[in-house]
Length: 477
Image 1 (cartoon, one colour):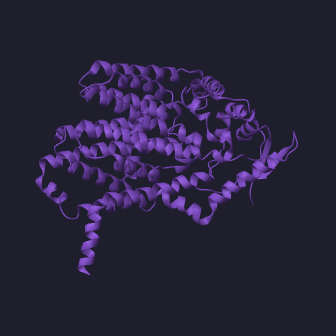
Image 2: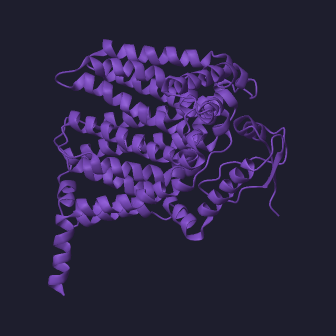
């Protein structure tokens, strides 16, 4: 029996990377499979009406499709929000090619999240001299994001809500990586700086929150960069883009619908909200993620960092200021902290800043506390790491449980079937007829919104503009 246990232990030690990869893959796959049952709704119709009409005409090509998306972008810049990048992206929701293709947006978003995080971590590892692959850390970060976002429906499955925010957060990390490479690589390439200039402008037109986050991180990069002059160009590009977005006619039109807060009121509200969110998000999943970050830091004591107590205090304060900064953006404009899709960005930023601080503190401990290094080198290292990975993938309360529940109870299949039945009924209508249907069934992760029993409601109007058919949904009894 002892030999059997010893063999298991040896197998785990020798193949822990494979085991960790399998655990992380098992946590990601259900999210991808659930995308098969997702269908467009609400703003998906509003932003894609031009591109959908072009596809339905069967007289389109890549250039005409890009032109239709550009028309949408210009329109929304003048009538709603003033975001000159995201409206262009949202015009390409995959449902324009057929509702069952809609889930492709989920797959592409997950791939984008992983790819950009991988590049970011690979860059940081390279600059710091960490001799480890960034594949597993990027996969762990992806699992953390999928499992922990406050709203998975608005952060992944509803194309309009997800692609309006999530890609721009990860593009901000990619932008930081480009500048870091330009500043610290032995042979900096001009394409990294040019790419950062262009990307900074595009991020500012994505959404207000990540646009401001990008500006704050660029400003911090400028403060720490050894070659300060080149960093001015991406920062200037981001500021110009943000000004174009902030002064857009569409921004003013939307602003008129909300009560604008005062500067003092915004700062006070952000101060209070920051502690409320921080303490609310420090949970078992956060602990598991930070333990993995700490393990990475303790395993690399001789990297190109020289932390000190004063620097740790300064980093914590700056991180808190950055977090408060993104909270200020929606509150100042609208008098509240935004929809839950904005909270997704708040949470991702909090996790990122937490990881940066824990890593920095871990390096400090590794360089100054021999006992910590000895503990990390103990026989329990591998089992503890795998336990953290497992907790990250299947922590109680994680989104993966609600996703698996949708499969087990059939709610995802029922939701998709109800949507498809609507499309079938619509095709059988005579021109000018109104489609009378029932509300869509509940789906915790897939159902964001639905039409109602009012033909003048904006959601019903959006459906009519998109499909050319009026619709009324009767509430389910």
